[in-house]
Image (cartoon, rainbow, N blue to C red; front, side):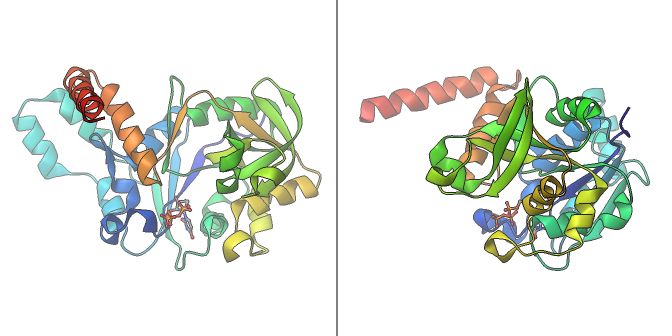
Length: 297
Ligand code: UTP
């Protein structure tokens, strides 16, 4: 039996430049799909996977994130007065118990690997999860939960993997596959942002990871990688070089890249249509829009 994964790191210290000017004052992770901020989807996924300690790596200008998880006695009292138990439950699901959540500062955006390394003292010698909240994954079972279950069989480090078109490979870390066993893929190398013709496969790394403490050790070396940033992918690839096992996991679910404008809009439409309280009105509106577009053409 492998050691249980109970800690997750949420690196949210990036500048979010693709969403300027919104991200000048609103953290990207607070932007909402319908009525829930991106970070809430990430937290719900982690909770479903058995995570008990939530570690946020933040930066200047992210205080809205800290407030979001705080108790909100005035709002609660107002919702109670309205006698709306469902809304009260929604509100309560955003509050974290004392001690369950920790905030660490990354003083400079030196890369995802560096952000993860900032949480090293809180991780100590345990395996841990990393969740990038701008990758939102919809599915029947939480993506991280699927990975935690697979990790119980494999051990080692594990990254979420998804097939992408070869001409999009240069936007991702790409896996070089040694062997496959159902959804589990043994990895022999990882290449960060390869050109299409140099990609060893079309299996891309998506923002969910289960990592061993050895990866944190590798990050200690502060090796600068692609784009001059300290890359998490490099620290995981070092595991393979050291002869330790690294796996990809082909998760079941639909991933939305909410770090990009097009991905965020697609997620907004998909989550809007998936909501029973909005579906009829919203789908009617979309049909109307499409018929107007067809007439115009
Ligand atoms: P991105 O590459 O999406 O960068 O980071 P970004 O700054 O968030 O957004 P853009 O590209 O400027 O629009 C992927 C994840 O890594 C975190 C981000 O917060 C995001 O969750 N990150 C990145 C850090 O926490 N620190 C860093 O130094 C870099």
